[in-house]
Structures are given as structure tokens and as C-alpha cells.
Amino acid sequence: MYAHQTTLRVRYADTDRMDQVYYGRYAEFFEMGRVEAMRNLGISYRELEEMGVLLPVIEWRVRYLLPLTYDELLRIETIIPEMPTARIRFLYRILNSEGRLAADGETTLVFVRANDRRVIRSPHRLREALAPYFKGGDQ
Picture 1: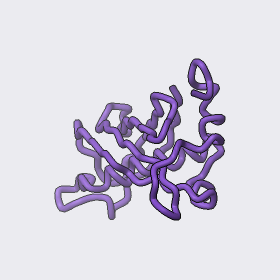
Picture 2 (picture 1 turned 90 degrees about the horizontal axis):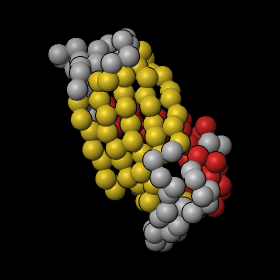
Picture 3 (picture 1 turned 180 degrees about the vertical axis):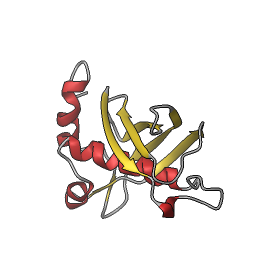
């Protein structure tokens, strides 16, 4: 299992008229966690695109547990629970400024070739970067 944490301060633009984070922003928070987790592995989305690989989201789930408000400092925990194949799954936990679980969720993305949108195996470079976190290495 690979895990990464990043922090984020809730902006005023993230909130709604009830002074809480608008529910649609959680997809953006998950994306921030996902992008930073990949960057921490040494592979940016830009590099994947330059390799001719795209990663569309094919499934998304979120569970809202506590409201988040303007100016809170959040911790986004992003987990890759298994070695990616043609798909990669990310689990998320968003903790509020008190360290309490405010939301959790999951996304599944699929690796596709940019030129024809055909599903492909995850790039070797990504599997190589993740290998130390999974028993058995490059699966």
C-alpha cells in the first residue's frame, strides 16, 4: 500500500451560502491529493501525457461526514491500495483542522493511449515506482 499526505487551506471560493465547503469541491480535493501523490512518486500527470498516456476517472464515490468551513487547514490522505493494472484505484481521507475525519472516498481511473483512447496497461515506470510499497514488486 502506498500512502501520501498533502495539506490544503479551504478558500472562500470553496464555500457555499451555508459557509460550508460546496459538495462539488470534494472532487477537486481528491484530484489535488491524487496529483500530489503521483508527483511524490516521481511521476507527474504532465509526464504521463508526454508519454501518450491519459487517466480518465471512470468511477467516483464520496461520503460526507463533517462539514468543512472557510480557512480550515485540511489534510488529504491519498492511498493506492494495490498495484495498478489497466486501472488504478485511489482511496481518500480528508481530515479537518482538528484531525477528525470529515470525508472519505474513492476514485478509479483507467490508463488509455492518448492517440486512440484504447485501454492499456499502467506504465512500467509507475509500477516500478510503486514496487517497494507492494509485496511481490512489479505485478
